Length: 402
Image (cartoon, rainbow, N blue to C red; front, side, top):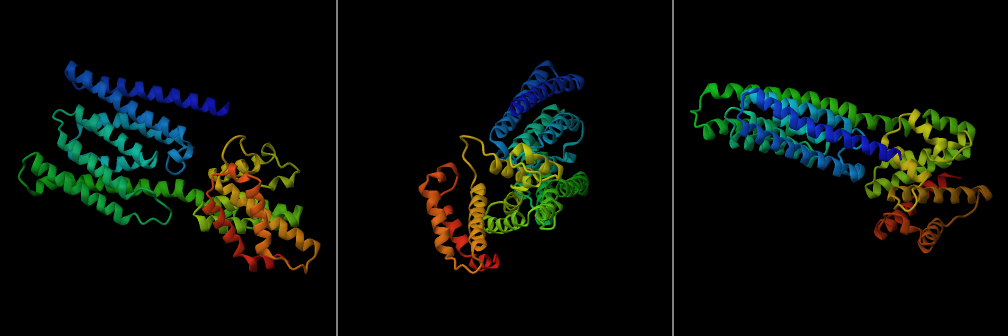
């Protein structure tokens, strides 16, 4: 019910943006004295562009978090705000010399707040609006900014905390400079001179400032924020885990050891190891107050600002949705917990017991496979065997449990 309300809310917002785009372009075209034919053309094209971009956003939303880059699935308001600002800005830029348009950096902003495909189409749409509203707009400037924007998006995609942006930004700026100068010399048939370089230099300075400021803010508030939070909650000395240790030492060590194994599997198979480790650490945190249902434990994760992906894994693990395929990350945590719980049980029965870890792990895996439980998980047999192999390699760690 809550998901349906959220979807209806955003559909209303998208419809409003669609109408706002058409109305604003119509009003601006009338304000700058365009002919009735041009006003009609501009309004229709603006509505087509807005409709295409908003349809892509709606389609991406239907595919869940995989439809967006970074955490944009949960922060759609950012793109909505940028879209609304861009409608106004694309009109205002038509009054500015086209050599000064900062569309290269705007393409990147649109892409990072949605995904690369949506960012590219949105950038093309707004550049088209600016060109149409110019007094003497041409295909040459549209080509120039679309190509520069596409190059910038390609070079600055998939940013991570340790990504070096210096070279990509430099190449993007060089590409922008070459295109602006080529446009002036080849498309405008102007003689090359120092005067031709003034606006391109100002354009590059503006794009450089916008990119550096935005990429720094994006890194701090989007990329690094999640990483820093994982570092805190995945520390064995984090207050929640300390409380668990004081409440029940066995549960605490079970969580720590499960987290270690789950992290090893995640690293070996390329999963989000930090989110998997957090799931292994905290899925039984409800022991603190005696409740293990999702409604009993959700407040722990929200109050401690757990990263969104970690909360999703925890929700799925604690209260898996009926009829839905479970993630391979959930399987990694479950297998790790089963192995740790089995070994800890045997050691508790007899501290000096000789345990054949390979046999124990094989038995656990074979039982799960024979029961048909694997049908509930989005995992391949190759990945399943890889999980088995990784767990078998940790024999020295299992001896440490004694």
